Image 1 (cartoon, one colour):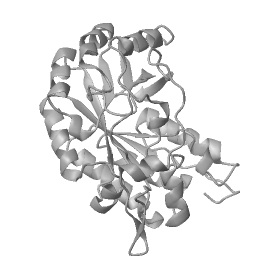
Image 2 (tube, rainbow, N blue to C red; image 1 turned 180 degrees about the horizontal axis):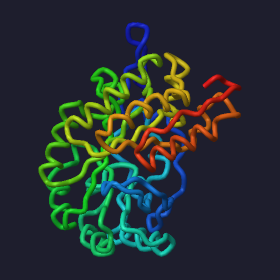
Image 3 (cartoon, helix red, strand yellow; image 1 turned 135 degrees about the horizontal axis):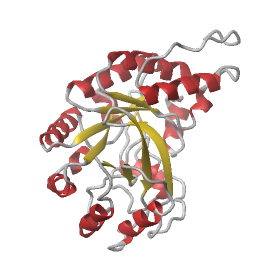
Length: 320
């Protein structure tokens, strides 16, 4: 395992070290999505709309990001031709009607080993009634397949990419195989093709001093909006993949507390520069106060849905 201390305070992380610390994968079926959901989201059309999310089952992403746990619901080989359209068909038979859909595949939609190119036209044909199609992709997979897919989609495409942080030193330690220039170049290419861009931004990634987390996250959001990103999803960094627990035990890592999530939201929603969506999955776990937690999370949800800053929640118990 190539994980070692350097200068007494940092790790060297490579693909094999990430793999060595993983647990087992979950059992998934190549003909079924591993999860589906419908939720309300403030859309690129600047209103609250129902968005369907289909978590596709496909081959594992070839990248080995330090903090990623999405590999848990992936396969070791490419799915058969026709499996992805079948997954979408099954999902839509169980979901309500909507005009917007996310096809998230725990990796890169335009990696042909994940989503076979022969399935592009059947996918688009089945989704002809949707006005927005959102997929996730790494900046280095934003090539001709992506641009051609946009042309075939009739201009409905939105691509979500992991920016994570604007800080080069931290970005290198995340093992994402990209730098800030790669991300910026991908955004420029997508915008030139009239593809809407959303970015995933981490709050308090590993190897970052906790006291710097809020300012760094805000600077990353500012950078994203400055180059034309339309939407930023703020994700409080979590553990659970093996490597993050190794980092926690050796150099220290803790998920950001709820007040830091609120601090980022309080500033970003006042900017009015682009959509900001705070990821609230399991957010209660980072709250220190049972008395005000639910109200504070509800406030964040309401800001997600309206894109407007709302008055903070006062709590006599914890003094928030």
